[in-house]
Image (cartoon, rainbow, N blue to C red; front, side, top):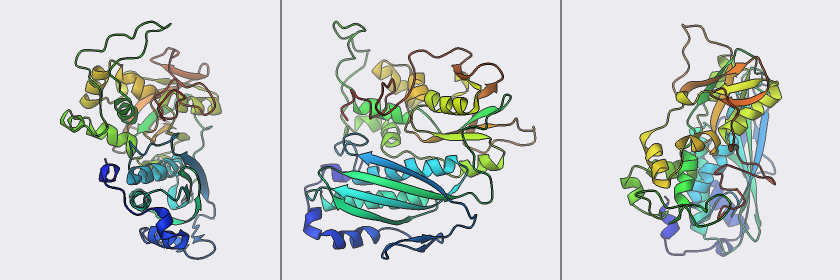
Length: 370
């Protein structure tokens, strides 16, 4: 976790003023050959070699998408960039630029905002791009509006609607660690009340409250689970790689694997069957699940916010291997529609939806502390 969470208060945004703040932020952003005109003019200009531009946008609001007592500024910057850049990769495109609108109270610590810029810059560098521009405003709470652009390199975009019976379903990246990290952050001394009310169920053996700054998390091998929630690491390069292999449908896993695969199934009019034996579940994830008394597959199937990619491809010839970091997790079936898990319709699982009922461990869920 960023040391800034526990550092003394320093200068505030209002002490610097708008234009000095803009200069301080943009000085932290790198360069990219795709950005022909960057911050400093009325508008930016980006190269578009393909002649088409992939565009996606997201909002992040403090208290809904992040908490400053859980995540430092750099964490939020990484996450804000990652969730947009992953959408570009899911279309089979290469990210070419990021634009960020920031609204913040004047009382926000300057170090936090500069760390936010550092996180944005670092995550963009992972994806081979940079922040090309944006805007700043005052507000009562911290909000970010992030827009990412991408280039298809001459390929057709990979939509959600192209899956066909007989396709294989491939996961690029990991799912589950972000939800596990959130569960550790929200862990309480007692498990939730039993169904229908009544006294809480007894805590599992070995259970104890978790503090966000507890060094024992790292000692128990759970540190990377917290990091996965604070700073997801989408496999950006695997989006174009899967597109080059003939991916016919793809999306990023932001709201839970079952729910996002369900989007592919609905758009394509097919049934997709997931095979739980295929999911890699590391020892740390199992250990954290045992500690909290949950099934680790719940995090894998419904957790969300890892921003892995899931794609449907025609079967590959024996001479062609999936790229490193990819694993086959299911298949597209010729009967029915929707999602099945090991051939059965899942019950009690889902994912996150705004303005609706959620069954996932997404930080936006209505009864979450966020």
